[in-house]
Image (cartoon, rainbow, N blue to C red; front, top):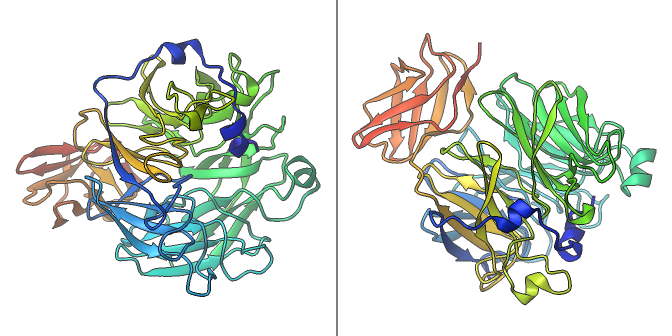
Length: 491
C-alpha cells in the first residue's frame, strides 16, 4: 500500500531496456487542457471515456466552481466544459466529494462514477464516498452513500456487466479483520453491485488472506469477473482473483513468492483481456532487476493461473493498460523518463513520468517522456478514442495543476462498443465517427437487419440470428469501419 509515497521516494533505477528506449517520432504529443483550479485540478486515477456524442468525459477530484471536484466534457480537439461541480454554498458535499475515478458510459446513455469522500454517512470524517449517475448535460443523482460497513473511498472506475448492473470496488471498508488492521492499517475492502436505480448489494468483503485493497474489475469472455488487489494474499503483496456474479472469490495468484518480488508486487489497476483469453496488467513495485521501492512490471496472466513478466518497468505503472487498434499495449508510469524539471527530480531524480508501448515479442519502448511543462505524474490510464488517437491525463504539471493530452500515432479510426457482449436479438450500441449515411452493420459477417443511425458518432444495431463472436463492421459512405476488439455473442 505504498503507491502515493512513490511520488516522493522512488529511486532512479531504470531497466536497461527502458533507459535505452527513445520516443518514437511517429507519436505526435499535444497538451490539450491545462487545469487551473476553476476548471478542476489534479485528475488522478481516471481514464477518460468516450460518450455517444463523440466527446470525452472525465473527472477531477478537487476545486472546480464549488470547490470539491468536477465532471467535465471535452471535445477531441481539447475544448473543455465543466458539466457538474461537487459541493455547495455551505461547503458541504451531500452528493459526494473528490471524484477520483473515471466514469463509465452506461447502456442507458448516462455516465456512472464514484467519489472517495462525501455522501450522507457520518461514520467517516468527511463522508465515506458515493456512487453517482450523471447525464451528459450534467444532471447528477446520488445512487449510494457508503457507510464504512459496505466500503470506504471507492477509487476505481465502475464497469457495466452483461446483466446491466454496475460493479465496483472499495479499497478499504467492510468488516474490520485482524489481518487488515495490522497489515494495512484498516479494513480490507469490498466488491459491490449496484443497479441504475441505486439498489446496492455488497458482494464480497476481503479478509486479507484472499487479498486486500481491490482495484478495478473486468468481466471476461467466460462471464466471470477478474481483478487484482494491491495487498494481501499468501505473501502480503497482492493477488489476482476471479469472482462469480454472486461474489464467490477464487485467488488465482499471489505476488512476491520470491525475494525482491521478480514477478512484481502491489498491482494497482484493473486487468485487460486479449482475444486469445489472456489477461494483461501492471504492478507498481517489485521486478527482479528493479530496486523494490522503485519497481514495477507489466505482466501476462492466464485464466489457469500462470503469470509471465513481460517487462520490468521500474517506474511505478499505476494505470491499466490499453490494447490499441495496432495490436500494441500502451500504458503510463507516474515517474521515470528524462524530464529534468526540478519539480520531478529533486533529491531522488525520479522524473516526471512516461507513456510507453509494449509491442508483440515483448518489445518495450517509450512513446513520450513528460517534462512537467506538458504534464507530470500520469497516474491514470490511456483511452484510445474511435478516431484512433490516444488520450490521457496527468495529475500535476502543465501551466496549472494537471493536464489532458493526446498521442497521435496515425492509427486508423474504428468502431467501439458500450458493452462488448450481447445476445441475439439484443440491441447494441456502437461508437465511432462518420456514421451518417451508414448502409450496413454486420456481426462477424452476418448482416444486421435492424440498425439505427442515431448520430454521426452513434449507431444502435440488433444482433442478428446466426451471428457469432467476431469483428463488427459498419459500412459508411467514406468506407468500412471495423471494431478494434471482437464482439462476444452470448449463448
